[in-house]
Image (cartoon, rainbow over all chains, first blue to last red; front, side, top):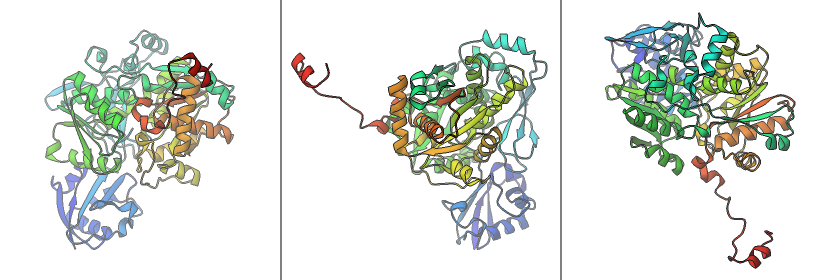
Amino acid sequence: MSVTVRIPTILRTYTGGRAEVAAEGATLAEVIEDLEKNHTGIAARVLDDQGRLRRFVNVYVNDDDVRFEQGLQTVTPDGAGVSIIPAVAGGC
Amino acid sequence: MAVQTVATGSSTVDLGPAAALSCRECGHRVPLGPVFACEECFGPLEIAYDFSGYDTEELRARIESGPANIWRYAPLLPVPANVADKPNINPGWTKLVKADNLARELGVTGGLYVKDDSGNPTHSFKDRVVAQALEAARAFGFTTLSCSSTGNLAGAVGAAAARAGLRSCVFIPHDLEQGKVVMAAVYGGELVGIEGNYDDVNRFCSELIGDPAGEGWGFVNVNLRPYYAEGSKTLAYEVCEQLGWRLPDQIVVPIASGSQLTKIDKGLQELIRLGLVEDRPYKIFGAQAEGCSPVSTAFKAGHDVVRPQKPDTIAKSLAIGNPADGPYVLDIARRTGGAVEDVTDEQVVAAIKLLARTEGIFAETAGGVTVGVTKKLIDSGVLDPAKTTVVLNTGDGLKTLDAVAGTGLTATIRPTLDSFREAGLA
């Protein structure tokens, strides 16, 4: 499955400044694994030492927050858009 | 007085005692700039200060002789020393109302106070945080002021931008209360409804900030969030100064993202560290609406992570289902011996009416949440009625008239004395 991943500003040092990159994978976990192959170091920023999503990272597959879905096992259909977003924005 | 200067591009800016940005999660430090998330762990960045060289009594005298707004605390905020001379909305120094009638109703004997932030320029506490963000926006050379908002913030940003002569363009959920839409739109900036809830709006703004279309935009609660959030410290400063430089024993704070509660704690800790108040225990309580209660749910379950919820409550200004500072709220409530509780929408409405009936203060739904939770915590024995207690009202009831829409005429009579007597009004 080929997906498009939207990269937040603070991770663009790993993607050569690109805001969007392509990745392969049938689940979010596989997509992150594939990202790591092409953009070494990015997985450690998104995942903690136990391989879980860091608590201040939000990931959306299309319009769905993966925390309301199956987390890292959320299915990433062909052509899906994946967005990685810092969770600390907003509110007061 | 410690003053830091920061080079941004070709210019140098003055942000008073602000020294750096520090990650609350991992401690990673970066220079002051329009960034909000840690490049190492995504944790929230917050302002680290250099308060060295402050003499306690000199500082106290300087504050007390300062303007009757938040700039009296400029030495403790990320703003230049001459901030009061610049066009800003100058919020703060709102009333701390001794609520004796409400205290009697609730059985509080140790002193009950309402910090009434409906008295700010756009009638909510948001003016405090936006005033800070405006100074940061100026420092970093932004030309458009923006935000994601549940309504109150949109108005505050619109007003601040108008005063400062900046463009504003703010984003809100499309189905907000009509009053809040009008109060945001009237300042003449652009107001955009997003088809979705607040979390969707927030996500959109986070994406816009990384896009060339968002170039030159200062989002007060995204890329300016470390500066903006510090404005909530002024609630803590004011409460203590208004109590005669004394910490309250208990303070009840509404929770949306949780930032306000964490900054109130930070403000209280700073006052202790600077010797402006006596170091003694205080408890911080968080208040949510049941229909959006991710933090109180986690607190009551003993969890230290907050599971996001889909909001469904009349308290729309608190309807953040994925609260960024939720884990820190849990830490603070537990550290201070406080609690996090929630109330139903019916209890929110009853609390709005209770506060209005007893103290003549018309709170918006968020104020109904804090008063409702205060009552619930007293009834359950969690909040000690013999202690000095401060309850925050963060906004004006005129913003959320729909919540009390059933309130109306006592009677309709003919313009005659007989009719007056017949209605039992004599």
